[in-house]
Each structure stands twice: as structure tokens, then as C-alpha cells.
Image 1 (cartoon, rainbow, N blue to C red):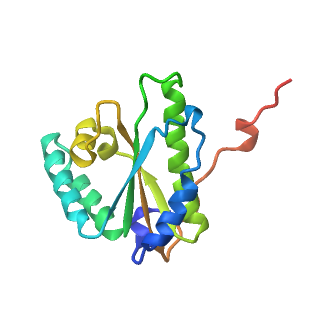
Image 2 (image 1 turned 45 degrees about the horizontal axis):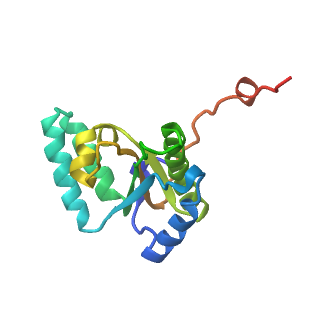
Length: 174
């Protein structure tokens, strides 16, 4: 599902919270909960756009890319920023905590899709730039944006892209 095909209306607050409650059920060794979710919607999108514009200029992001980011944001009812917050002092390896956050992103995406909403998981410069995460979400030095899940209604379904061949990706232990 392409973000450009998402539109209004989106799920209401109760629908969103019910979906997120299910999505938060991810593998979490040590019960560290190395993740958090920031909802971006309504008038607060203006604040987020200000950060996109300011930080984008500071790091010389192509103005066309910034405009695309803004259009995606304004055209979609809800954006969920998934923040990975690994515990460095934990006995649980950092990679397991990161995988837990990745599982959350996939759970969020699939839970919205199963309920009939359109959704897309994006990363890009707003996820990869540590300073952007600090400015937008008060990320600590250990935290990073795992991705943005864009959610809304849809009328057009993109044709599915080619998927890996099962024969090429699955082997059997002998």
C-alpha cells in the first residue's frame, strides 16, 4: 500500500488504541519494553512539519524530498513513529531488543491492515537522522526511530510487488 494512496478518514482513537494494544504483544525477553510509540495527528502535524523543514534544510535534504515528506504527512490521518529504546545495561542483547521493536512495527502494520485500514511502514532520512529523532521525539542517545507507520483509508490498491521465491529462500535442515 503506497502512502500516496492513503487518505481520510482514519481510525478513531478507540480503534487505534485497540489495534495498538494487540500490536504491542511482541517478543520481549526480560520484559524490558525497549520501545515506544508517538502518534502524530491533527493540528500537531504542523509542529512536526516545522521540524522536518528546519532539520531538512540543516542537513541539505533535497527540497523536493521535504515536500514529499510533508505531503505524505498531511495526506494521511495518523502517523505512528516507533521509537526503539534499547537498554544498554541489560543482560538481554541489544539485537534482541531491536528485533522486538521491528516486530512491533510489523505488528502495527499487520493489525491495521487486518482491520481494513491502509498502512505503510517507511523509514528514510527522518528515521536515520539521530538529530531529527532528538528534536522531534526527545530521543536519548540510545534511542532511534525504527520507522513511521502511516495509516488511513484507501480506495486504490497498488499491485503487489514481486515477492521472493519460496524455493530460493527456504531450505530444510538435514
